[in-house]
Every structure is written in C-alpha cells, then in structure tokens.
Length: 613
Image (cartoon, rainbow, N blue to C red):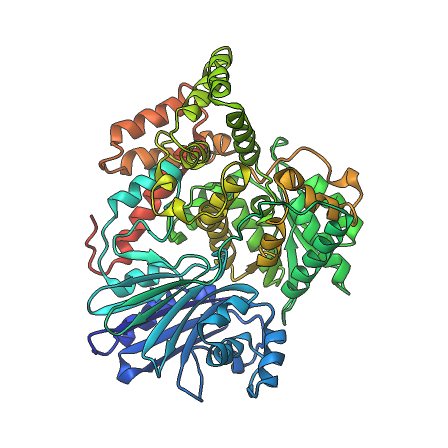
C-alpha cells in the first residue's frame, strides 16, 4: 500500500521537482517505509512514490520502478493478490524477474499483454504507467475502486495522485464545482468521476485512461458488473460448495504478505465469515481487532468476543470513549480527500490505530458483503416495490392511500418515495434520507449518462448495482482507505473479489436476499447461535455524540458556514436549533455538514495560490 503522485508537462517544460517532492511528502502516512522519484522525457514526465512495504520488503520493490527493457515507468498503490500465478505464467513466456514484488509483475504483464493485463489482475490497485515507446500515460483503477486515484489536466500539464491534497499542491488553484456541490448536498457524496473541485476528476473503478501528448484521452472499461442472467441458476448444495471454494480462495490470496495480517471483527456476518476462513487457513492464531461502544444499542463486542474465542483468535478489544471523540474528529476531518459523511469513520480510524499499535500492518475486513449479496434493507424495499408495480399502477396508488393512516413522518417518507419519477430517483431518495445532508432532492444518480451504464433492470439487483457504482467507492471504501492509511495499515476486502460478483449474478434475487448465500457458508464454520441475529450494521450514536462531547462541532458549523447557492447560514442555524431544541434526529446530516466545513477550511491551505471560490 502506498501513495503516488506525478505530472506530465504537455508543453515540454520540466516538472518542478521541489513541488513534486513536497506533494509526495504530504502522503508520508500512506508509505512511511520508503520514498522515490523518477523522471523521463528530459524531465517533462516525473513520478514520485511513498511506500508501505507489504510484499518483498527489500529495496527490490522500490518505486517508481522502471522496465529496463523498454523504459516504461510505473508507480503503483495496492496489491495484486494473484501476482505469483501471473509471474509463473510470464516466466513460461520468457520473462525474467529480478524481484519478488508484485510491482514488477505489473510491468512485465503490461509489456506482454498490453492494457488487457488489467483484466487479469485479482487485487486492489491504482497505478500510473508511462509507455516510453508510445509516449502514452495510463491511469488505471481496480474494479471496485478500493484504491483512490485523482487527476487533473489542462493544455499545459496532466497531474495525478492518490490523494487530493498532493494533487492540489501541484495544481495551485482551487474552485468548488457548483454542480458537484449540489450532488454532495443531495447524496452525501459526488457521483461518478466528478469531484467537488472544478477540473479534478477521479479515475472510475474498473477503467483505464490512456493519455497522449496532444491531450487526447481514451477511456476503456476493463470490467463492469456482470449482467444478471435472464434464466437464473437454481440454488443447490453444489452452489454452497462453489461459493465456499471461491471465498476460501479469495481469503487465501489476501493472506499473502511478508508482514503480520489481522482482521477487523465486528461480530456481524461478513467479518465473522472472513475471520472464520482466516482461522481455517492460518497456522497461527489470527489477531482479531474489535471496537466496543459504551452505548448498549450499538455495541456488538460481546458477540465478536464469543466468535473470536470459538475460532481461537488472539482478541484485541478497545471500548470507544466519548471523551476523545472531538479530538479524533478534528484530526481526521482534515485528512479527507472529499468530505466523508459517514460518522463510522471515527471508530474505523480508532480500530486501525489499535492494529498499528500492535504492529499489524495488514487487516482483512468484511466490506462488500451487503453490496454483492443484497444485505441492505434498501434492497428489500426496492424489490418489494418492483413486485408491487408488476401487479399494476393501482397497487401503488392503494399503497399511497393506506400510508395516510401511518404516523406523519412515515407517511411523508412513503409519499416522497412514491412521487419519484423513476427507479434511480427512488433509490436516491432512500439513500439520501440516510446519507445526504439535505435529504430534499435525489436526482444525482438518475442523471444521464450514469444510469445508462447500468446492466441490471429494476428491483434489488439494480439498487445493489447502484450501491456498487456509487455508495461503495465514494463512501464505504473511501472511509476505510482514509481511516486505515492514516495509521499506515493496509485494509483488504476478500468479499470484494470480482469472481464473487460474477458468481452472485447467476442467481435469482430470492436466493441472494439478506446475504443468504454467505449465511449458508458461515454455518459450516460457526454455530448459528454465535451469528444468527437481526442485522445491526456498523452504526454509531451520532446524535448523542453531537449533543454531548462533540457539541463544539455545532458551534463551528454555525460560526464558519459561508452562504452558497444551496444553503445559507440561516438555514444551517435552523437545522442546528431543530436538532438541539426540538430534538430532531438529523445528526447524520449535521455531521455531514460539519465534515464539509472542516474539509473546505483545509482545502484553502492545500492551494498554494489560495484562490478559493
């Protein structure tokens, strides 16, 4: 795991090396073990790198890495889990290796297979590769967007980085994108390849961008969510066997490391399954890290402890103390590339720090199980409504009439849902009620051309695909990357293996709903009484936090808010007063706005010209 940054001066001028090194050192937490810089094209192309050594701890894995056969230059953040199998295949084709690093495998794979090599990788990665012969720069990102990659270009230069801050240090100017800001207010994140910064974009998950010196950019998607089969495969005992094998192999690959590997264990289905498969394959006890809450409605640590004991894990638990939350938030907020609206970033950060203190540099997580195997309640809602619409439009109207007899808030929610014009709008409506600071407009993901790229039709599978394309990379994985890499800990997600996505696409919705396939496998490794309970999710008592130890964030929000075309300071004060005086339960929305204020304040410091609009 690492941090990368680079620049290509399209006007032929030399890259400012001092600025490049300064940008690289802004990512030292992503790679404290080694640093490098390299140039080509008489200095008009330069790359810099910060390394967190996980595989091949020697200097043989130093980056940027150059292919001595053709001069190609590579910087890479992530892990190619199947690099050993690819190495064997490449050696049989005549390739000669000088290290055991997966970085060198990428260079040989590109030389041998070209851009098609990316579809062969099983892993998480964000990389920049300069093809010396073709005079082309390739930016590529893994299928699910586990690792971030930002870029910016104009007529004079093309800059790229793992994080927004080093990119801004190279660009020097900063202007908020008004349309993207509207999306953020609606959803709690920015959709697709856009960012909150005008002129800065993200490489989309599963894509490779090829840039030429004349500024032309070719976009190629090397993977997309598979289209669900019209005739589903029946779910049988052999399906459980196949999924068991796939899960075991996914965990096996992600246990590849030259440093200690642990697991973040919440006690839920996903992390418990990962921990069980790790214990099955490990010769030594697995180290499990769990965070407890002093609030009983949110604490699952007792379940995690029972599971760890059953699996023979070395159990490390930390109970979250409210007294340190404000300091943790003030430390984490400025690190975000874009405002992270999920307050679970704090406990994730704290548990990553615990792993770092125990000298565990790699931890497996349970991220991805809900998205691939329909685990969210939102999936159930969208599927039920799809079935209701199949009955006929009168059924939806009857639902609206019956909803009038429900409590006012529930009626307003259902009425708003039914008034949305299409599926994407309804999905966005429900997601925004959870994540969006405003929760009043839900059109972001319904806009073309984004919705045209979806493969699923309607119902739960389309909602899950929207989750995978938007919520997963922009919220969940961004949170995990930020929270772990600040402590120089690498998080790995065995449930986000594309082979599992392709497996799930073969089956009907009823066979997948509620993560039923994962439960079938889990009961082979853990007794049902240890995990079979209602889904709780990784939630946090954000309302209590903001009314208690984190109250100063509310004052900061009111004092430092600057009016824009979407929200005035008066509206912000009204939201806060409703929360404090009238007891509204909009803590998540207020948290998101507080994160935005902190992020915006720090963004001004990142821009060397201090030109902020």
